[in-house]
Structure formats: structure tokens, C-alpha cells
Image 1 (tube, one colour):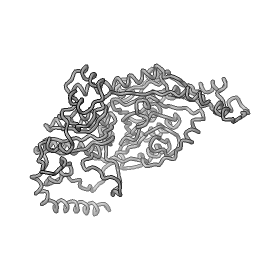
Image 2 (tube, rainbow, N blue to C red):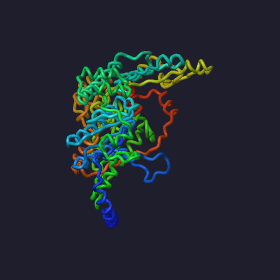
Image 3 (tube, one colour):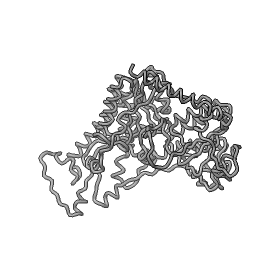
Image 4 (cartoon, one colour):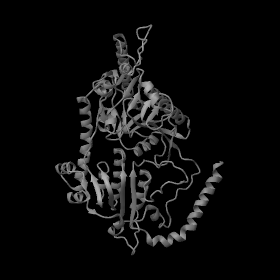
Length: 563
């Protein structure tokens, strides 16, 4: 009950603020804008990212900038219900959305248009991934000196075997599965047909989505849409001639283009959502609650999976993730957990460590795993401990397999004038030595360990998915699937977006799916992983569950936390 007086005081202050501002808002009601401007920048989070209460220095934030998909959705619902609002103006600037977030954004826009409102989009430059958002508008505008870099998709696979050989480094690996192509990165001199076929399958799926969007939004046949892609990139003039945009308009002229009043010698921009709220007699208010909202815990597995702690950013450290899961399990306000996986895998041991922690939490409260972009190999191993696995349609999923080995740098040391002699007692004593490769006895031990690791992986997946080992083996051997194909194969349970997953998790906990708050655990751990430590770890023959396809498709460098 200590919270009661503070809640009452906070609500009293909110009410007084509304009351004091009422006369000014009533005077502004007649100035309510018919058009509202939003600026879409970067990779929009699902929920607003926590930030400093006060900004000290740095460039000011453009008032129209959208802070999250959740806030944008709320704004569109309010505008859609206002008969005085004709539509919105979307300004795209460096929009770089993951496929799942782009789909969520397009759904919000479609719902707004279904309410009888118009959407006008404008940009200086858009690329292939952002154009479907620009093109989904009722009217598409471009700056007269702008560009439309509509060129399709490309994926690059890299191999380092020949380069390593030239400097005296040799990779020795054993793997299980013809589709487990990760060791080829270090051993081969050319990209394998299997890796090429995998990439082509993913590109075919994404290309088909792009062609469908062009056909639907610009009224073209699939053949015409493919021809438009092949003719890119486009200058503003060529984009207009090709029908990719409907008009060329300077930013300063957008207000006049929308039919809004323009005062002489004044370049007033189209009003923002904040300006719109200022014209409402009674704006939407978030009153303080007497009882705190129940929490939905979100635990991130983001980046390459490694042992130890720290590693926030490009690495998902096992100890850090396990600690976060324990915190979520102990928190009485956390009614359910979403395991947000965005990882191509990594250490098999660390992945299994995470899996066991997920299983323990799942015995106490609902745990739902969600894949935004990539959940492969060790990342998938961690996810199977959840009650259900949800995926975005075109996420990278699967790669059930394992590999193990080491790097031999004896020739490099020889070239540098470094001499070493290895003296052993025991057939496998120099198993992890980098000064030479494996002996036949050591190689046999390596193959045996990899086979055992693969069989364990199969057993874990079979048990989690309610299948036999033989059935999982037919889907495994390193095979990689899109979210849709993984659903058909039974490797994931449902296709959906982050907000759907959150609501479903709270439904599983029998809590109102419209009345909860997200809470992240151990998100701010600072990285204590150095390149030297990673190289030292790689020198020892440790088992790895890692998928290079995610890297080639862009999922490696951008496998950040799902927020």
C-alpha cells in the first residue's frame, strides 16, 4: 500500500496538467491538421528502446521520428478514428528493417488504409529492402534529385582455405552432414554447390516476395515487375518514367502538395503527431495504475553463442543468458518468458547449457521462443527448450549439425623462424596442439566425438519436437530452412510477429494479453570478450554448432537483440 499515495499524487498532477492545458487545446481544436507526418528511420524496434531521461549534447531528434512500431500502431489507430484526418505522410530516411519488422509495419499501414485513410510516402533515396514500404502508399513521391536503388538481392559466400594455405595455416575439421558447410569457410578454396544451392533457395523466396509486392502495389504483371528490378537502379527521372513513383516533389513543397495551407515566405513542414495531439481537447493519457502491470520477461540470445559471461552485442555468452533466465524465473511479476533468438549458433557446449536453463524455466512458467531473423544450429538448440517456437516467415532456421576441429599453424611458425618440438605421453596428448595436424589416432577420436555430438543433437531435437531420431536426421545434417519451410517441416510451431508472440505468451500464462509490460533481463552486460580470447578458444578442438548461411544472407552482422 506504500504505492497508493504516490500513484494518487502522480494521477493528480496528470489531471491538473490536463485541466490547465484545456483552454489552450480548445483554442487549437480548429487548427487540427488533416495530414500528419511521420519519419521512419533505421531498424525500428518493436517497443520503444529505453534511453536517457535528459539529452546532453548531440544532434536533436527530428520530432516526427517514429520511436517504435508499437507507438506507431497506437498513433495510427487514433488517427484512423478521427474523421478530420485525411491521411499520413511517411518520410523514409535510411530505413533498414528486418523482414519481420517490415511485414509488421506494412500490416499497420494496411489497417490504416482499410479505415478509409490515405498514405503518401516520400523519400530522397530507398533501396531494395525499403522500397516495399515506400511503394505500399496510395501515392509515392521522391525528391527530384533522389534515387531508387531497386536491384534485387545478393548473397556472398566466402572461403578462406586457399588464403590460409598461402600464409601457412591449415584447418582440420570433422563434420556431420553434407549441408553443414561451416568448416568449408576455413578448409575449401571454392564455394561448394551445396552452399550455393542453399543461398539460391533463400534468395528465390525473398525475390518472389519482392516481385509480388511490386506487382500488387504498382499494378504490374510478375514479368513486368522482374523487368523493373533488372533495370535498376533508378534516378528520380527514370523512376518516374518507369512508374515506380508517382511524382517528384521537393521536401519544402510537400505541404502544398497535400493541399495544406502555405503561408507566404514560410516553409512550414507537415504537422507531426505531437502537433496533432496538441489540438485534441482530451488527448490520450496513460494514468498511473494502483497495481503494477504483470511482466512479460524477454531474454535475448543474440549473436554468436560463446561460453562465459559478458559478450553483449555480437556475442551471446552462455553464463549471461543463463543468469537472465534465472532472474526471469525468480521474478514473481514475470508471468511468461519470450526467448528472443537471433543467433547463427556457436559453441555446442554453451548452446546446450542455454537449452538446459530454458527447460528449467519452462517447468515454472510458459516460455515461447521467437525467431526474428536467424535461429540456426546452436541457436536452434537453445530454442527447442521452449514450449513453442515461433518464427518470422523468412528467418533462417535449422542447421541441425555439428563440427569440430582446429587450426594448424606450424608452417606459419616455420616461415617466421619459430621452431618447436612436441613431446607427448599418451596417444592423444597433443590433440589440441596447433603446431601440427591430427595423427590417425587423434583423427579417429575427433570423428568419434563429432558423431556422438551429432547424435546427442538429434536426440535433443527429437525429444523436444515429439519426433524420432530418424525423422529429425532426415531434416538435419546441416539443412537450413526459411521460417515457412521450417513450419512445414515441423521444426517451428507457428509463423507470426513479435507482438503476436508476446500476446500469446501472456495468454498461455492466463493473463490479459492487452495489459502487460515487457521487461528485459541482463541486457546491459558489457562485453568482456576479446578477439584474442576467441582465437585462443578456436585453437582448441571444441565442438561448434554454427551456420554460415546466416552470415552470407546478412544475418551474421545484424543479429542484434530483438527489441
